[in-house]
Amino acid sequence: MTTLLAERPLILSLMLAALAVACVYGWLQTGKRPLGIAGIALLSLIPVAWIVSNYWVTDRERIRELIDETAAAVEANDIERAVQVIGKRQASLAARARAELANYEFSEARVNQIQNIKVNSSVTPMQADVELNVTVTVSSRRGQFASIRVPRRLSLRFEKQTDDDRWVVVEYDHRPVVGDRDAFSPTGS
Image 1 (cartoon, rainbow, N blue to C red):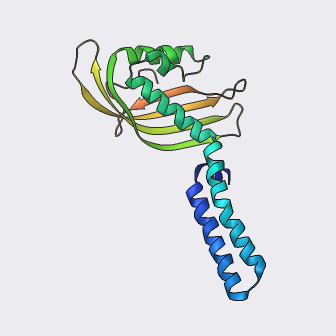
Image 2: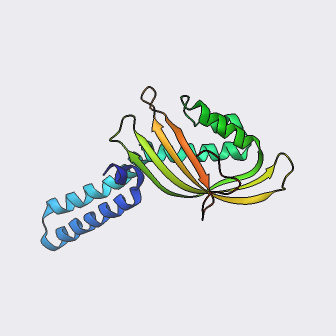
Image 3: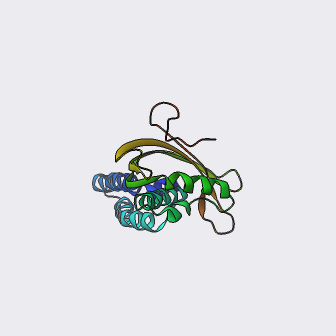
């Protein structure tokens, strides 16, 4: 229900509108005033649903925001800002990401599709596994190749820090959209 209320206000609004129409129709057919009042009350809940969804940021929405912020940092070639999404306890992972990003000059980093975000709240700290497809336009800083467009499939594991409720990346891997590892894939994953 929280996903419906916080992330899908259009579906909730359509459901409320259908119930309101049914109540008003029932009132018009039977003349029972409570049905008309219920219909008006249901209609008045539609803007409330949109207001709630605008102010309620779910864990899934926060993870989407982090992904978009990181893509913008990569596109701007701001390595330190891009690596900020990695948890402080994962120093080796952050070093690996810095080393990978330092090899390339990005002119585009775009999230094509987030396949899924599976939040697991049954573990402590909470974790989320994310699968997404991205496209980057990249050049080698060593002059090995000019600007090429590379689609990638990313697998990320986020963890919600208990001290500040911030989501951080604790594992990542990227591969071609179809197939196994290639020359751009990280080693040791």
